[in-house]
Image 1 (tube, rainbow, N blue to C red):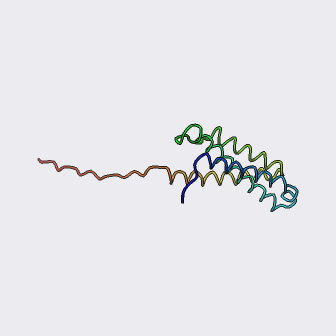
Image 2: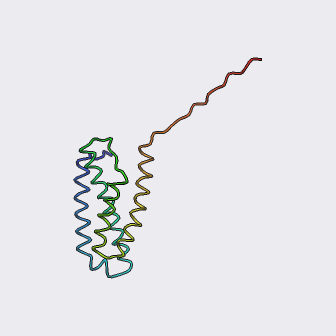
Image 3: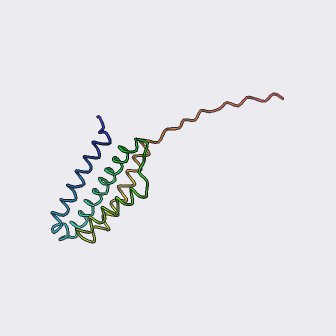
Length: 133
């Protein structure tokens, strides 16, 4: 499967950010009406977090080159802040569940990134020469 370039991925994730945010605002009455739906609203907020982080990182890769990496501050922090703000527009409980689900997403994104981009190190056993007495 061929992966999308940074520019195309930026456009796709930005479009999905707008769609998820619009959906959250369109259905905020329903998402705030029930206990389980407020948890679902926080889940949508965490999806929004992943999409915002993807869009920001792909934009930076497009502008600064492939070697640029997202850092905890400002990219992750501001993406989390934006998604929690969007969740807060739906219901205040959505903010808490958005934070918890986003931390879970961030853990698995980091784990996936380490498995894909960390070089494997192989060790070669060294034979020691025997000492002659």
